[in-house]
Picture 1 (cartoon, rainbow, N blue to C red):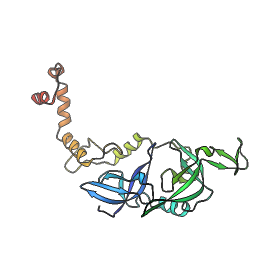
Picture 2 (cartoon, rainbow, N blue to C red):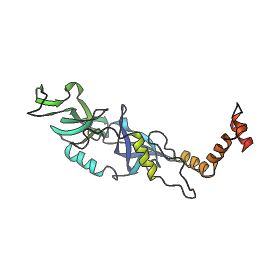
Picture 3 (tube, rainbow, N blue to C red):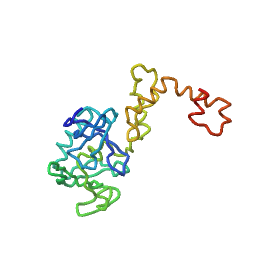
Picture 4 (cartoon, rainbow, N blue to C red):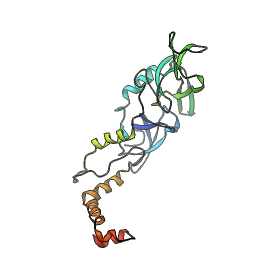
Length: 241
């Protein structure tokens, strides 16, 4: 991967939310295995750096092609469009009233959607009214502007009622996909999105484990002579190895 290449990157949707989604990014700088990326159609809040071997990095449009096509077609000039939107806590019914453009820099202009967490209906059991009519949902107090390429906006009735994907569930999906490195029999360490994605660190942990390092540590810690030692250090362990 080189400067100018485009990739899909799994990102947090907001600093106050654990909800994630894939977004399209452009590589602006490469330092060893670190990729500096920008998200040209979104806020510069998302601009970050990622490890080229991270599970959060995928080939361009492998995760975003259909999603971005929908956003370009339906959200760019959206008006009174019903959607599902994440309020940083849960997925709710919502309506995009209008859109506007915001200039981030000379070469970066993004589109924002005015999102209202309510939908308008003529007949509903609980009547709430504003200047637009009767609605179900939340009042104007909770309305906000959201970039149209934010993972917090999704097509109508695709997310309502869903909670965030639990981090543990996502980690289990990663566990199932990671195979032992060439020349190794077992996997002792796997990447954790937003926690540890260093390919070199994971490689050495797996190397240590496959060389019998963890088994040796367990055997040493089960040694009754060590159990009586009050100052258990690496040097002490080495004496008994």
